[in-house]
Image 1 (cartoon, rainbow, N blue to C red):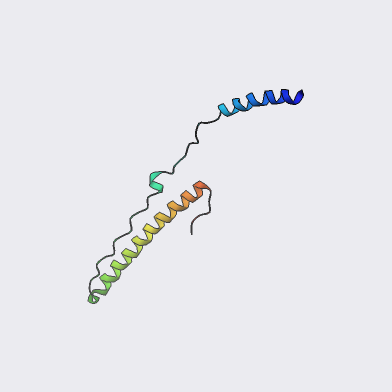
Image 2 (cartoon, rainbow, N blue to C red):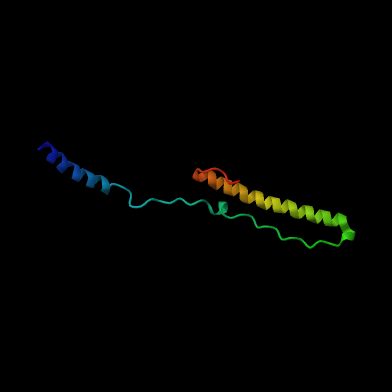
Length: 90
């Protein structure tokens, strides 16, 4: 008798609890600026070997801007990885 009474009470309670839940889980997306990386710089046209100093300067500027674009993307990916609770990308 007690088992049937317990069952008669549990079924309406379970239905009431199920009715109180959220209809769907809300998905939070990262900010748009965190999922877009800086553009990779275009490789420069280098002058001839007779202008080696100018050539070195242009190459250095290109390497620094390439490194800056990589750093921007890496920091954003690390931020997203930390946001979702994973280890940072290598």
